Length: 206
Image (spheres, rainbow, N blue to C red):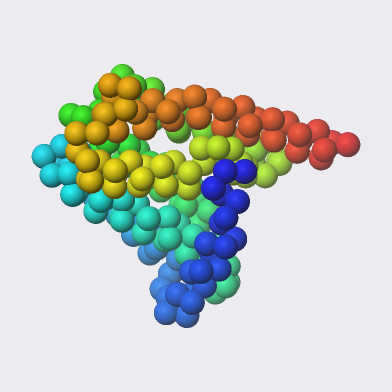
């Protein structure tokens, strides 16, 4: 299931914030998450000269995850959950991923070919998850490189880079190594999600 398996626990930790946000529309949190992702992407792009920007980006990425969880909780508990909100959430999530990883790829520390290949596969992971609902099953979040997984791995890489800017793994910068690892992980996740979707479709027809 990947890190997604701890989502219920994470949502529970955020529950006290719901009262504070009760009068805030869930879409505001959704758009705020996208905005912070764009800022994080800019910081990653500039972190070649200022390594501490990477830690700030990691913090913003964490806040993005919290907002992504809070908008759904708030929508459900205030009775504002709707199809349009779900569409907005999926759309902004994809743009948020693009903003963050485009910034990382454009950073001089990252190999562009490896980065672009990884980002394409990351988007395919998300597309495959949505495909489950498109074929009448359910939105599939399983796999070893879901959104939470890749954000947490990214945060770890950012903090590691801030602590040791000259860190190289097998000759690759920490950013390039991260994206390189994402390639096989994304392929495995796509396979895991397709397997889950086909199982659900088969079960539904039975």
